[in-house]
Amino acid sequence: MSAGDRHPALRAVDELTRALKDVRDLPVEFMSTDERREALLQATVAEAQLESLRMRLMAASSDVADDEGVRDIATWLSLRAHTDRAGTARLLRLAQALDTRWQQVAEALRDGRVSVDQAEVIVRALNALPRDLSADHVERAEARLVADADDFGPRELRVLGRRILDVIAPEIGEDAERKALEAEEEHARRTTSLTTQRYGDGSTLIRIKVPDATAERLVTYLDAFASPRQAGYDHEASHDQRLGQAFCSVLEHLDPAQLPHHGGDATTVLVTIDLATLRDGLGTATLGADTQITAGEARRLACTAKIIPVVLGANSEVLDLGRARRLFNGPQRKALTVRHRHCRAEGCTIPATWCEAHHAGQPWAHGGKTDLADAWLLCAWHHHRAHDDRYLVKLLPNGDVRFHKRT
Image (tube, rainbow, N blue to C red; front, side, top):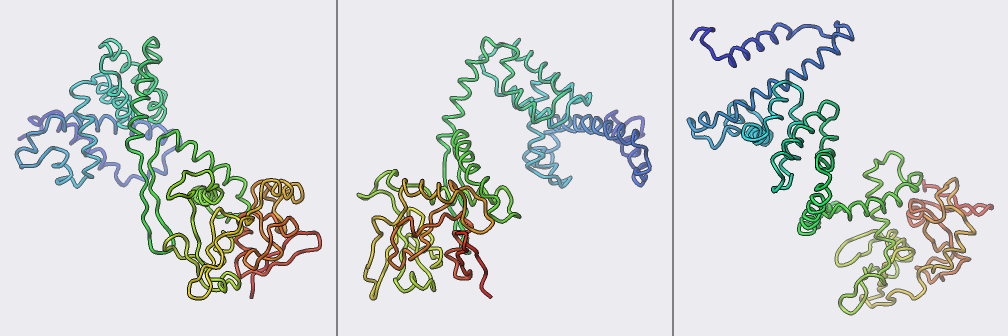
């Protein structure tokens, strides 16, 4: 077949391939700033036009897949061109939508006025319109979103697409949005789930899917815990890591008395430890059914968290099951806040309201009382150090506390 007999689409691809070969090794760094600016924008437009051609070919090439006994053209392309199957299938779905319904979006893509990402967002918004919407309203919605693509990227178009009825048909937009939100909320409730997976290295992966409103509330709570503690935690920690630390703090500050009852008692977690280990800090304890923790962590939890210690003597005899006045009460916490203002660790400025009360004099494990005279306010990070046997604790003349790692 001569070059003149080849289909114009093939000739266009041939010419493009030859042109790109001509500039394959061209040192583009020697182009002027204006030239690179123009080339970047034009290459982006050309990419959209080339993708438009590829998707039109995909939409019309089911016979190519049939000839080779392959399920669909996306699968065929992934086999022959070694493309990602999921990404190619996504393009095929978009290609079919543009070929069968959304002609304005298809034309804009052919002209390079919208990118594939923009087209995908627009089509998704249009497909989400109410089924009983008039054809005129649908056409106006498509035209408006295509026009908006001149000024907005995919992220902004996604927001505009959700509110497009408010723009083209405000008289029905509010009711349609209400119905859409009701459907979303119902779907979110049905698909809410939480799973846990232990790694065997002392950590557990928690996967949770919740409604958006619940997630927003959770993140707000975690941000409140995380932000003031940035000075106390590792400065190299990422925001995600600080949110994880904050999640741990939120759980430790929950009051079991406010949780639902089951088994005849309020929801509680027990930490089991023998008396000698609780006193000398050497060894381990058991949290809940079978989770092992260090003795130092057990002492810290007994000091501040809503966790009940089960202290064992010889032959696993239960010597103590909690203590009525183990935790500092509300008035005591207020008095400590007035007295200390911030964490008592030397140089730490974490506000008192974000600190934990520590049995500083006679430790609770040794029979110490929950009295103001025996209390320090420590941020979470320094409270961990106070129960870490690797650190020495010294009370300074001004009332501050100095921590020094043992050598």
